[in-house]
Picture (tube, rainbow, N blue to C red):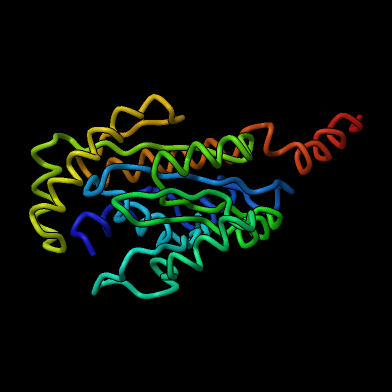
Length: 236
């Protein structure tokens, strides 16, 4: 765990019961939404995703992507990704079974549609870790159910340092990732929210606040709150 992660998770200033009441899930009778986090490689998206998932009162479900990319030594099949062949991927894509898909760094990534729909129908929110290509596809198909957030690094120098510290890619791959990062960063205006990840605790707190606000939007609460309002108006 990153040294800032525990501080960020513990530092929201809310206990679990208060947070559950504040954030509202099934008790509001709402449909869930898709929370999409995007960023260049090394900007902190994976760490922030883990922090959100470890915060139990948020009750987020992670969308597990399928990918043709080789598994890294630190990854577990079915946890970080579901690793499949290109032939299997093409069958899913051509059969309309992917909510989104993209090719990044020569590898294919996609999100199976059915598991996501099941979770949303239960009034729970699904967390996505996908790039801008996938984000645009999801928004085009289900715009009302989507909240998008782009995570920026504090500088390109720091981004390079993070990629080098990760020690998982050779220099030529790091150079390619930095080149692609500039292209991804140019897409920041396509997102609902943009955060600069200078400090994990601050960025996590911002994500928590965004999620809280989005769960209280009137458009998401019509079914549950509507009945409550009608009862209020009947009171003498």
